[in-house]
Amino acid sequence: MPNDDDPDAKDRARRGLLRLMLKLPVVRDRLRMFAGTSPALEALCEAYEDAIVTLARLQRESSQADDGLLQEYIVVCREIEGEVVEYCLSRTIP
Image 1 (tube, rainbow, N blue to C red):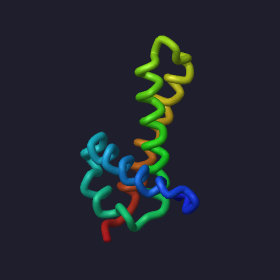
Image 2 (image 1 turned 60 degrees about the vertical axis):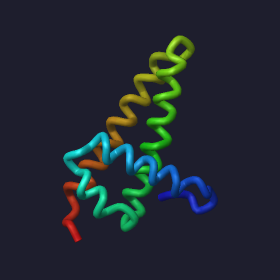
Image 3 (image 1 turned 60 degrees about the horizontal axis):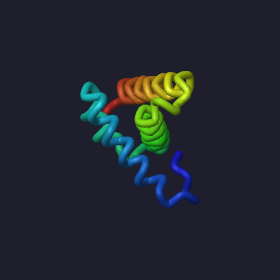
Image 4 (image 1 turned 120 degrees about the horizontal axis):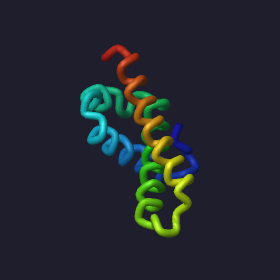
């Protein structure tokens, strides 16, 4: 769930949602419908934004980045994507 003490949490969740909608067209419509109604989905979107931004930074700094850390973030992003797909497909459309 986005941290109420962090004013940027909602923005990160929104950016994460948009990235997930681009990455996961199979659940894009469901993401659109569930957006703003589910604290759990909002938390996943925020976590995805944080992870994908870190992954991009590690990829840019690939000469300096620890390959293990880079691989870990790739796995984290894929796991979040999988959780989002599972979340969307396991819920009935309102």
